[in-house]
Length: 482
Image 1 (cartoon, rainbow, N blue to C red):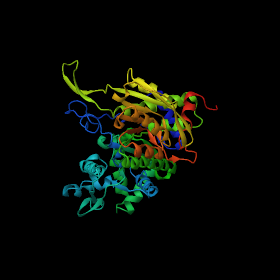
Image 2 (image 1 turned 30 degrees about the vertical axis):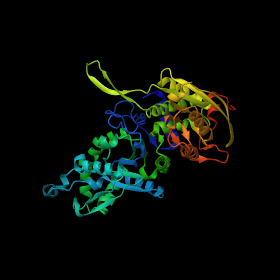
Image 3 (image 1 turned 120 degrees about the horizontal axis):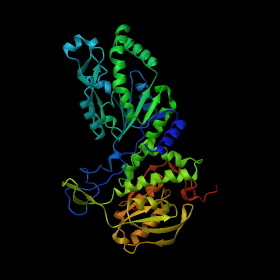
């Protein structure tokens, strides 16, 4: 992992309380085409080769794992309580215990309930898949005293905005733990505390005697924790020490969910808006560039990294043509060929900060410029434009790191359309967007695409993005007051 990631880990841990690990950048490049089409391919059909760019619009899945009695249920309850204004469903892995056979029931004290084989993982995966596709599911009801599922009743769980998946081994199976669309939290409490909680729970709620609880813990629970739960830490986006007592960590998770849901709802309204998949690596870089105390060098460095991700994602929405090549093993590889007729247009001057990333991704690309005078929310005036003569024949990547009111963007887009560029051939790339700006642009130009790395909360009375990052151009080019 690069050295700069360590810096992000440190900032996130120091600022937020919980320990962060497993920061990863994945699922960020999303290209679209169709392997069976000939010629240009529409950007919604290439699901067999490349991931679907609308995948982020599925329900937000939160996984909460950890050792026995580590506070998983408490953490889930607190998250649900704080998300009271959202549709949230909870799916417990415990509901998917396999019912014991008569022979296993006779020797129940020798049965390992903490082993992955004790669960019907395939049914759990099917259940999560149905919920993610917007369907209702029937979750079994398991009786911990009889060790059997109810044959007459079940719990109906309806599709929702947020799915919380809770259990000791939910991420032992990589199809859940390694899923880039899932947010993974792992509770981590002291072993003695967990044992005391388990004794109290099993004796009071499940009718077991203390000797059997201790015997089961030593024989099965502790070894299973070391063999199956601890290795799943590598999938965790957040590790929560002290479980439900760590209010800072829980508040951070809830804030992250609110951000995702805000983006999710806006993307539902405007399907031409794409937000790159958020990871704590990306969130960490946003934390750095939004910090008013960050140095110019670090601001430019982390801004460039984020800009590169946005540009890569934006390129994934261009049309492609099918292409076959012969590999060094004399095999045929069926892939795609990049769009040839492409150019960038930066809105001076902040947009010029995105040009290097575009050049690094597209060798020899032509780049035009548009300068618009800005004065508050009104008085936009075109000052200068220099565009390729054949721009009407090209797909255009419009560059501006901040989408605020949308008025400057609208004027730039209107100019491109006047030059003959089809609206559907314009992709607007930025780092952060205000909801007002997205609404302003999308209502007027519903056929273009907007690609951003985060949607912020709102504009203030001075038409500045909140929380925002201040005057991006001044900070990037070193012309701010400092």
